[in-house]
Length: 393
Ligand SMILES: Cc1ncc(COP(=O)(O)O)c(C=O)c1O
Image 1 (cartoon, rainbow, N blue to C red):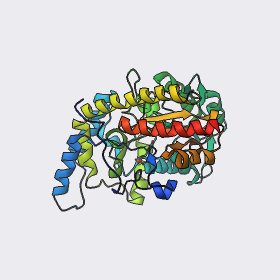
Image 2: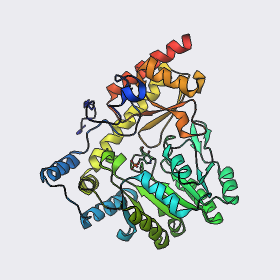
Image 3: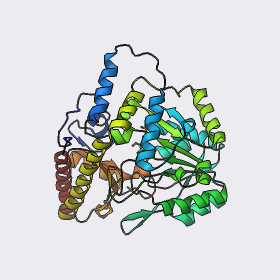
């Protein structure tokens, strides 16, 4: 392999959200962290070089958004996803979560119902509730180890007046890459009941083999008209700390509302490093990404085999995309606090405890697989010893 994903890069003492909060969050600095979604792999060499050159300039002034940056984004989505984006549809944002929150704010009124499909990335809850909107939770259905949408429940909420749906495509933490048919069925309901869609597609590039990411807005003009798509190079190329992302909104009316709010908050300017990294990543990072996908897929296989051999009571949900493995640990019969104790105190590892993702999450754990295999093996070994002790006790 051209890129060495087995390299263990020490991140402790780098102000890392993942590696430097062991004591504060888990009561022990030695806890192995496989939780928050960033990768323990170095970024594509082209990104490191571009950022190093940028840093060498030594003056970090206000910066402009270049045509090259816009073209890099458009080129990537055309080539990788067959999606044609017009330059005018793009708006820069410091993060996908801020974009989700602003979209909820401008597309609904206080008290309106906003639908999400649990278990789902936990900030989805905040951006609804903290904006004073009502939560309409439609739990996904786990059928034969694969999540499906509950169209009946979704339609019930829409019929009752829900105004907006937050879609997570691909889905974190369930690992589904929604198919065109599934999205078409969902979109048809949204059109029927006048429901708008905010589609968080931050994991769009992290898709395995025969699966294909379908941008919801790319399916039809009608779908595009009701949709705000939130995107970023951050998950794909491991640059979330640069806080650089963008939205795609082709409907001028929706875009005007979104941009107006961004301008009110004065948060739409690009930062000094983000666009440079974005250009390098989208123009030169494809080969690196393909290696990462291959490596992470190897980790998926490794982890699934490990569970089957050493912890057969626990059932991983095979992901079609994302670098996150969602594991059904309900056989342990533990509540969320006991699960945390098992991880942090007994196993000395930190996966993410599932109840934070809402209904259907309790009893599950989410493992971040974007790390060297040796680290994953160590974490699984610690976990299985603790599980064995728990089951034996
Ligand atoms: C579905 C999803 N959306 C958004 C984010 C974070 O986006 P940002 O850091 O750009 O706010 C994550 C990070 O894990 C995620 O999984």
